[in-house]
Length: 427
Image 1: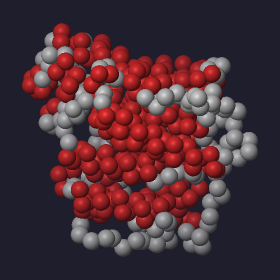
Image 2: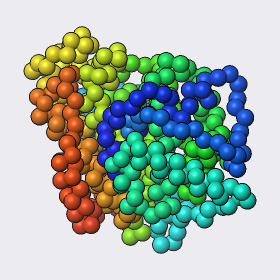
Image 3: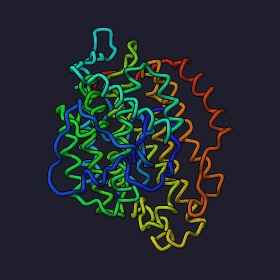
Image 4: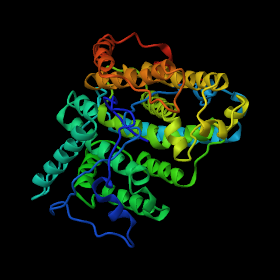
């Protein structure tokens, strides 16, 4: 599911028992929960939890291009994309437009995002500080590389990213954690109601309080958060995807949303000439790319859970079936199928990389490092001869360290902006 920022977060971070921060208890019991005042003593200690995708800033359709251009170029079998492809893209595109419009209203004349001053409620300063510190501790404990990346940001942006990370992690834990069997659609409805409360300044617990404060100081909209919860609902009811369009929508819900949440916090470079919409599209594509990479890496693991996150129509076209995946056989048919899936993921990464240079200076390096490292997972799948049934592709520490100076160099040597990033709408 989601991830973001040195979105070098270790892909597929393994976690141990326990629902993250007592979420199962707080969202699966009957009735609405009392809202806890900000100044109360609250907060539960985090235990291990996983986050599928907050390693994802992202990039996609360029401003002025037809809405279907990027999508159609990434579908392995364009003929399979019918009305559903248009509806899925339209749904995502409309969210992108809404996010871009919200940020545009908050832009300073110099082009940088305004960070509203922290509003101090008497008696709440210590609690808020503790809430953000706890979010930072969770990031440092369970996503070490991600945490190091956040240290490159300004204190205000760093704390906000921590709060978003923790919310995404807790949300993902609901359906992927050790107590996932106890989670029902009704429980997710309650979690969404709780989200709405915190956006209205009524946090339930300490970690909610950190996010509640964040969304008052940055132009962060609730829709991507609600869409991520919708991705959790999909995981409860769906274990197969008929075509890439269905899978695209799922990837948006569980990972692309993180990019939309994070752009207002990471900031757009004051000197950027790109449209806000194009930067959000860039954020979207990295989320999609990261999630597709997770899916390709985890084919065997997902199959053992009875799940196949691969387009069914493309499997059939390749002469493959669910039975082949459950059997875990690496054949020439499988290799050819995987080559096409990897090519598609790399195309999304390429789209994303073209947008990284439009971020604020403090965000470019960690995001680019994340992108380079996640993309290398695809190289490791190839190095394993496409055996993603019994071998887990990962990027070793040496390669991670080697990627950091490369990412840094690219982040300071901003390429000339291409006309496609700065041109106006097509006529």
